[in-house]
Amino acid sequence: MLTAPIACALAVTALSPRSSTAISQRQQAERPPGIAIDLVGSATARPERSKGGTDLLLQLGLRGAYLHQLSGRSGPAVGGELALRTFAPQDGGNASVGIDIVQLSSQAGAIAGYRLGLPHIGLTPHLSAGLTNDFLLLHYTTPADDRWRPRWVPGVYLGGGLIGSLYAAMLRLDVAVGVADGRPTYRFDTGIGVCF
Image (tube, rainbow, N blue to C red; front, side):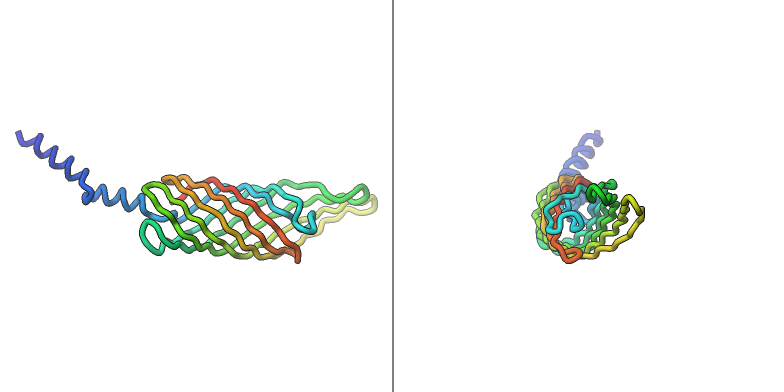
């Protein structure tokens, strides 16, 4: 006889906004992105080819970011990011000199933004700045010579973008400008990943 009232009382308690289950769900919905990892596709100007940042180089890579929320559901967020990008070898040069280029690009920087949080949805406009390192392996071929030449091209960048999250899914869009090897560089990033 007492089973039905007890079951109803437990159900009402579980649905209460003050129940432990409701509090846990609310905290999960309000939490900041924390660690975000995405597969990123980039269109990057390469100084060796453009001499002014006009030729775009398509790259793929992995990127990770950490954001620390300074207040509740919405508010300032700060953190850092790391990225690693590469692309398949490409041909360059002219009729007399052939150049094959293999490039591995890394990036490390800081992020500062403002998170606009709704239940299960978050938007974080942000600015980022940091250092880039491009490691290139150049293969020169001429009728009289065939040699490999490594290069290291450090640089700096300043960018901005938007991180959008729906539950654990994340979409991140970024634009950055920088200087590498004394020449301007431009980068457009689109990332799809997860946050937890």
